[in-house]
Length: 193
Image 1: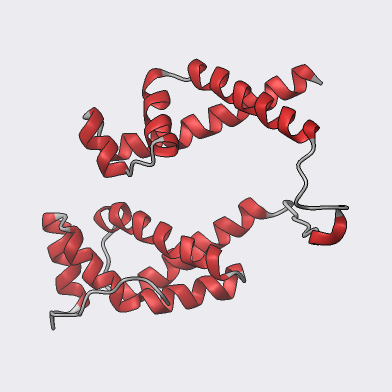
Image 2 (image 1 turned 180 degrees about the horizontal axis):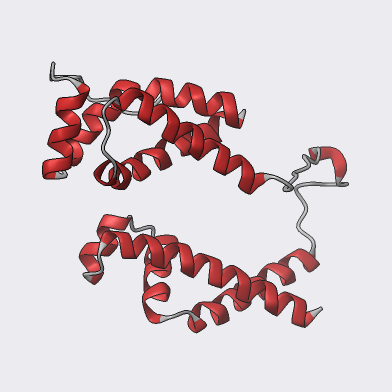
């Protein structure tokens, strides 16, 4: 697995690291603890999700869940608790994806995959105009966070520093802003049809 790993420099038990994290909220301690089991989490995610990229995303998302949930729950056996958390995450992911089917289209399906058609260019331009209109309709915090994240390539921490908005709220504004932007654009598309 290609995640960056820190060397395990501590010989403390899982329980000691859990207690230290819960007391101080130190993400370095949590990272140290999570890295002990990251390969197992990745293997579990591969087993359930059947796709390496989706599994890698799940490993990161599980860590983000862990940041919050480990403070909320009393954990006596971290390894088994993490296994259950990971399994539930994968099952929820599968439940979300149920009913969504993708079809791969071969490159030679079109006469010339390199050629751009004028209709496609016009369609892209209309989509961009629609996106700009919908972006203006978002709540100010959502608009700011979405613009900084997607259009300027800023990370959550950068956005927090630039705007003074809490990290969790930045994440929420981005997710809600993206959803609202998508709904607005879909509504515009339906109205234009």
